[in-house]
Length: 500
Image (tube, rainbow, N blue to C red; front, top):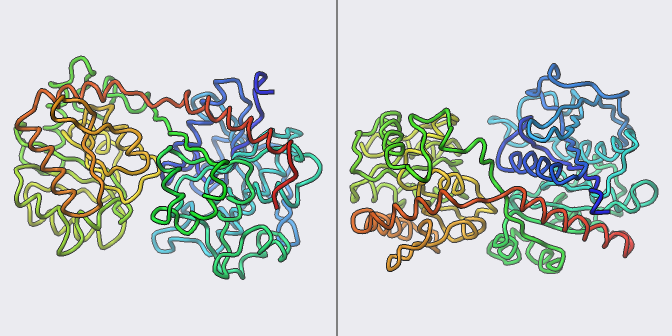
């Protein structure tokens, strides 16, 4: 079966270029393309949100009836294609549930109150669509809590018939988000109440969609090997660590790849100058000057520039970095001869604090919001890239930094630990700087260490930049591994009864 290619349906809330709120959208689109290039028949199902224009899509078949909540919801179905391998992407069109701004919520309403129903329709609708297309997948690959009901439906309402031999994989992109709702919303899933406990939905008398999916799926994956180990511990498990330890033989960490076509300093149209790993000094210098100008910093090639492109939230380490009265950013700006360029948007307290600090320190430039050109320029123009995450399932920004010859300074966690090799000041080996404890002092000391290397070991830094630019995190390798995991999920499905 594997030699002929597998039929795989991905059930997701995001997929580039149609919808994206974070790394999940990048992963779904890129992995689907990589799997298709290996010969698998891959389809993606996601909602048609308000922002996805139907004019560039093709309407498919008759309206689709989706059993839900004791009745039936009806969706139009549109089809698009990924721009890489041309993977079919089916978008379920339901004006009442998806015809609004935002994927999960808006700035004024961070989480839509009917999200359980919205993503129940996605998961049940994906299975109904497969039947309508007369295309039964070998694998249902569900992503994060919005897709977690798909393996539950396979084990309950679809346990017999067309999907009896269909295996399921649930990928955890960020265990911190689990789809937890008041249990009054449970009937929207269209499942009997006995399954509230029996299928693992109950979570402190509330509904937890991810927990139910973690119990139901044949195989579990996450986006880096280190994160797979971390989430089995109380420190990173978000109350799921016991369940994940129980399922540890079914849990795999597969490192995400990155898009080397979009993120390539040799032909990046957003840059002031392009460059390669064979000749990068002049190009990086021109981009550094452009970045300093863009962020209102003094243009000075001799001052090391530290960049950040991030969501401004505590998970990304901003509590330790700029928490009022204790963050390390003010110390570094006051005590070190360096510059910071920070791009991002996030929690209101963090935006206010960074804006206030930028007004006090002339060596700190802050841009609140997101700008694609500036994001590329930060990666190319910075000397170092700071990423002090509390936890990081995989991370892409540190991969981009390596590609652009910008040395990452990261906490040793999740995918950061799997992608950055710590500097050895005796030999010059490594690709970046790592630290363990997420404290203001640890960030301060590690930035200080990088400053020491800047002034005392510049030849080490040049060698590290060249080394980092040559590292590759391949989606083709990830797709090969997922093909093996899919086959394992099918074998488990065929070798046992459904998990309920």
